Length: 166
Ligand SMILES: [Zn+2]
Image (cartoon, rainbow, N blue to C red; front, side, top):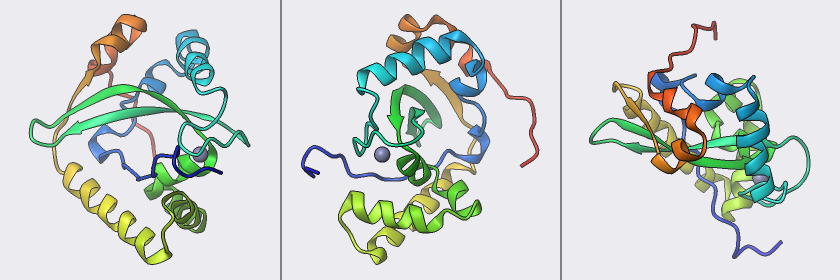
C-alpha cells in the first residue's frame, strides 16, 4: 500500500455529553440515512474505507464532527466511510471496553507507521482531550451545505436521544 495517500489516523472520542446526539441515531431507520447519506458516502469512497482504503468487512458511515473548544460548539462537518479497524480506532474508548484494545493498538501503529509506545501516547492524548471536552455543555450545529443537501439534518441540534443503559 502506498503510504503517501493515506491520512494518519487519530482517534477523536465523542465527548460524553454528546453521546447519542448523532445523525445516525436520529435518522438511522429512515431512507434518508440508509439510501442517501450512507449511499452517497459509499459511492464517493468507491465502497472503500476513506482512511486506509481497505474494502474488507463491514463499512460504517462515520460522522465527522469538528469541536470548537472555546465556544463549546460541535459541528457536523460531513460523512466518511470507515472499515471496522479504523472505526475501532476512532471509537477507541468503547473498543478497549469491549476487548478490542489489541486491534486498536496494532492498527494505529500500522496507519501512523509508529511503534506501540507512540500509539499509546496518541491514545492517552485522545483520552485527555475527551476528559476535558466531557466536562462542558455543548451546542450542536450542522454545516450549512449538509442541511442543504439533506434537509432532515436541520433537526439535529435539538435532537436528544432516548436514554439508554450502557
Ligand atoms: Zn480503514
